[in-house]
Image 1 (tube, helix red, strand yellow):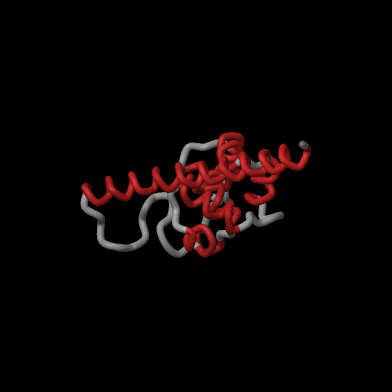
Image 2 (image 1 turned 90 degrees about the vertical axis):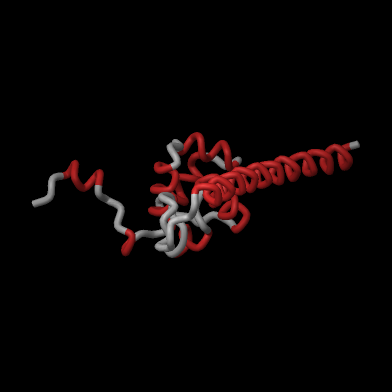
Length: 133
């Protein structure tokens, strides 16, 4: 018989994982709480929780943001195939200088995604201000 605490720590199985399961494992691997990730995505914690529990699915723009923030590929997040949170996608190890460039690229991609969201928010406020004036 399996101990309950063992089930709590070994709940993740790649062959049975859902999008929500992969989202949880990627978030935890990135060291983020639900509150932190929800704030970075600009969504409510209840929305993120619904994604993680497979009650709802994120829209395409949020999926793209998640990949940048969590450092995983879109393919892995959706299907479990590709670069996961440990960076292992069953390919030859990447030389250190290239890995550093890839890390910089991920950081830049995250910044661009966050800037794009901010731009959309400002545009929405501007349109509302124009409409109200």
